[in-house]
Length: 94
Image (cartoon, one colour):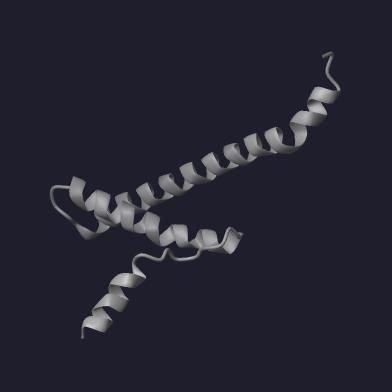
């Protein structure tokens, strides 16, 4: 009994390994869905199925859109800093 409890508690001290490939980004979708559902559930006065689902879907889409835009901007900044900055500086007047 004690050993099984210690094993379960010990599993929370080791982080789950998630890769950096595009397929691992699918783990983002359930997290965003949970955030959208809980946020909308705490903000509405009365939960009615259709308006709640519509507002939750709109929030889910806006969060995903913001994450995609932020990722594209950060990817562009990383591309400029790591690879293209030296090329741009070599051709400059400095």
